[in-house]
Length: 322
Image 1 (tube, one colour):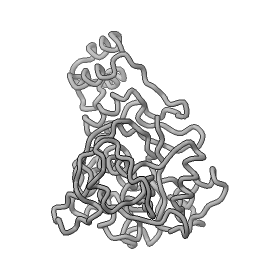
Image 2 (tube, helix red, strand yellow; image 1 turned 45 degrees about the vertical axis):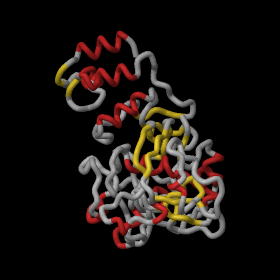
Image 3 (cartoon, one colour; image 1 turned 180 degrees about the vertical axis):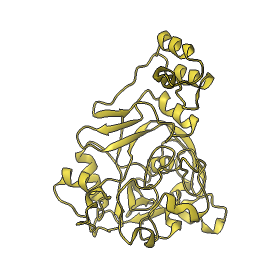
Image 4 (cartoon, helix red, strand yellow; image 1 turned 90 degrees about the horizontal axis):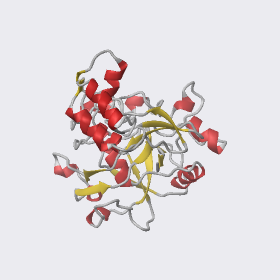
């Protein structure tokens, strides 16, 4: 970004037109080339887009129809990295999650719903951007890398586009290690789930601030057995959140990297919390297709033994450092 880019932006100052150049200058997608776009440009001054060596760029800038919050779009752009990419080796689609600060934990209107492990609410700052799978890892993506499919829900026309299930934490960790990826931390997962909202359930383009009423949950989650016919569903069918992530609630539980400690929130560092050093269980997030709405909340934590018998309600999504 330099004076030439500034000159182009100023040349198209004002309401956007049908000109592709005018629309490209509308960096925050609000229909105006104005001071907010100027701020985004200046935040990236002197840097060209830095594309990870492993990535194929699908969309350089965040799509304003998906990332509807101007502040989130500006945060993504300011990293100097492309928003939506594909891992060249596996074909897994990922979106950039920028650094930021949020309140982690249960803030239900009814305090009796909060559990010991969800409390206390505490401020967390993530200092580094990371990429996160736009969808839960599919059976096709797992099978292409690992050579066999452990999932219970095979044989349907869409099975390979459903999330891989019946995967232990150990197996999920083996996949990510082989692919040069990792599992997200618990803090990263919840920050990505919330996407700038503080409601019980994450927002959508239609409900950008999220919602507290579980009657709306069917717009974002396969849950409760009946909504999905008591089985997993093809990823990405329901509304995504403010980062463009789908199925963060429901479908399958998602392994995260952290060990599970019921009391960790009371001692967690406020900056880049790494999770407990040891434990007997690993944490899972997001709820599954058999579970009631309570489990699909952004703050709900679940603990499962990392090895042993795999559960058909559990899968994962990948993370990767830029």
